[in-house]
Structures are given as structure tokens and as C-alpha cells.
Image (cartoon, rainbow, N blue to C red):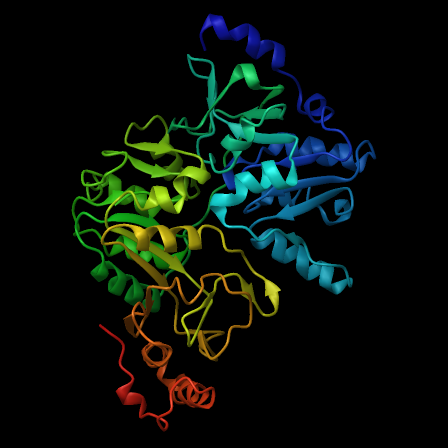
Length: 455
């Protein structure tokens, strides 16, 4: 920290209790997702709410971690600090389970593509406060949002925003367009605490089979986007023999970081940010955060840039990989609703489905296991049981452990046959009957052996 910026830093430095006292009743607060959620500020704000010193606050966010789940989103504070989720996770699902047991409404979800969240927060919600974790101030008087640039950077630049930052030496200092100058900060709180970690999702044989199929669809020189979970991790494991890959992704994962360290990714064939891996948030293990810290090979940018389909499409041969929960026989995907309840949300899936397909030579890949509930339910279904996340018009390549199918250029009947070929054999005849009964095609029931996916 240079002397020229120290006075500004010191005059803004305060306790978490004094900082949250600046947030009035009725405030509309935003916080970044995951690692950017500030533990000391959230704990102090929860205590202020329990003391009755504040009321009717709406807290807007994506992907809550346990840090918020055990503080501001304590069930008893639900009418004081109202969670306004753009993406559900385990915290919201646990809250919904308890709310359902007590005949209360579910946690509020705001449907929105990830790329549009900044505009939603600023223009439609009108947030007046941002709380966030940042790295220590650099020599230029800037704080890096590090692992959580997402919508936080754009919100931080809203005129008149109340900006309360938690400075944590464990937040990696990341380069790119992810800096907040000390001059714009309302209050600073210091807190040395580990960042939330995301354990690797356990992989099984089906994950590895799907990962191998997708890895076979990726070519040297492609630009990658990977989602979250076991399937994208399996894909990364299958790419070790590739060369000259690039990265332009919403989420930086441990799997992608390993590809960079192994030299598989060098970003040499990208058309934008050549030589740099681009992301908007990161979540994973400590090794990932250590890798990101002060690393000139990676840069973070706000989500309204990273996930903008027009920006994505400026790179050639973008290969986008995302998971879904259900696919109907038309090719529409439900990636957010399960068992009649909100399970996650759309996130950036549609952003990259559209951006990847719009890129020259690009491919958008949607993947899922063929079954759920220990093999008792098919994920290929006659009709979705939740909202349409990715429309049938947008879906490009679909992958299960039984192969892959390119839906572009196929009629409804051709799509139905191709998707039935990706279903588990135990469900193919049933799906064929449903397709025939719905008039998707007019021929008699087909022998399941003729329903072959592309391989």
C-alpha cells in the first residue's frame, strides 16, 4: 500500500458493526456470488437485524454459500432480511424445505439470464448498496474483486451506490476489469478468513463416459466454456491430449486451471484477449485461488461482458458445455426445476448456448445422464416438468452416455427419434409411444434398435 492512498484507506476503515449501521431499513442490497460474499459484514448485519435495528431489507444475489446461510439467511430473520435469489443452491433448497413444512412461500427467485443480472439490479431493482469481499488494496489504490467480479463490478459503478467492502488477504488479486478504487468506497472492514471452498463433485462411470464423448467433440484450438459439476470436470480430464485451447468462461474451475497449468490451454488461437483466460467468477479448492492470485495468464471481467453472446461469438470455435436436468422430445431443456420446486436457475446457460452457436465454427453442448433417481426416471421426457431454460430453437448438440445428437437442421420428428436414441434403453419404447401418440411422427412404434444416436 503506497503512502498516497493510505489516508483514504484509513478514513474509510471501520468495524463491521459500524459499517452495517450505514445500511438503513428498506435498503436494496446486492452481494456477489460465492467467494465474494463477506462473512464479517454478513454476521454483523444479521446481529443488527436480530436486535431489531433494521427491517425490510432485500438482499439480491446468486449462488449463496453457507456464510450467508448461517447469518443473514437464518430462518428466523426471513421477514427482516428477505433473500432475493437469482440462482438457487443448497441454502435455498434447505430453506424451501423448512418453509414448505411450515406452509410458507418458497424463497423468492428472480428469473434472469446471468448476463442481464447487472442491468436487472441497477435498472429494474434499483439496488442502493453493495457489500463484497475484495483483495487488499494495490499500489494504485484499487481493490480487486478477485474470484467474484460477476455483477458486483457493474453495480459498484452505479452513481450514488453505498459501497461496503470487506478486505480479505485470502481473496486472490486478479487482473482485468475487476477493480474498485478506494475513492469510491463508503466503508472498509478488514477480515482474515478462508474463502469458501467447493469440494470436487464425485464422478462416476457415466460422468466419465459423457466426458469422453464431449472431449471427442472438442478440437485443438477451440475456445472453452465449462459449467459446474462432475460432468464438466470429466470433460476437462478428457482434454489432456489437446493443444492450443482457449478459455472464455463464466466460471473458472479447478479443471480448467489444471488445463492451463498443463499447457493444454495457451489461448493462442483466440480472436479476443489472446494469451489470456477470461472468466467472471471462480469457485473451487484452495489450489484454484492460489493459481489465480497475481497470475498474468488469467483475467476477470464483469458478467455483462463475459456472458454477452455478442462478445462470446467474437472468438471462433467456441465449445460451450453445460448440464441440464431434463430434455423433452422437441429438444427444449429444463435446467433449473426438480420435483416441482426451484432447484437452481438458468444462470449463464442460455448466454453461452447462443454465444457459442453464433461463433464461427462454434458448438453448444448440453449434457446429462440418461436417467435420474437411481435409474428410475428418464431425463429424456415427452414433456418438461419445469420451465424451459434453453428453448428447442437454441439447443444444438445433446450428449448422454449413449452418444450425441446434433439437433440443428432436424425436424421435430427427426429430433424425437435422435433424442430417444440418447435415452436409456429401458425408456426408449415408452418414449417412442409417447412421441407417436403426440403426433411427433406418424409411423408405427419403432424397434428400439433402430433409434441410434450419433457416435
